[in-house]
Length: 149
Image 1 (tube, rainbow, N blue to C red):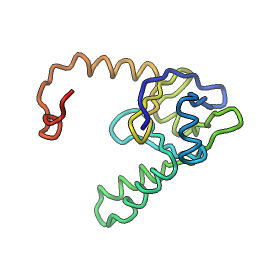
Image 2: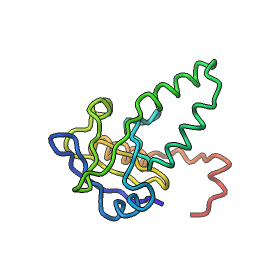
Image 3: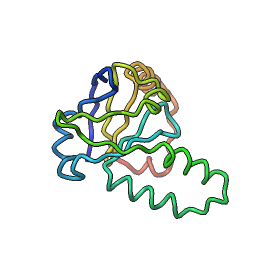
């Protein structure tokens, strides 16, 4: 399980050093092979260990693509998916097209989300987080009401 918020730098080539606390787990889990793609709901990227992504991809390609929403989902998630792996310094290269799409420049925020990570532009993350923290909408779905915090 990946958890926590980390502020990192992208170098001039768009490489991001994976924090060592995750790098060791990812090396054991997937030999450092990852897949990065777009998030469909928020201005961030999703970063998956390759085996986790392959299961999601299998589910997506099984969907009947006669449905316009399914095709859209497949085009955006699978179409933008890029494989990446650790270099000798424990960095991954975030593809330029994906960096541009979510405005990743120098400072990024890496957020552990259980089986995957989110990669945000630091300023966008801070603004979104602050918005969520000040949101007074107290209505919860039935699923969330059953979780004790």
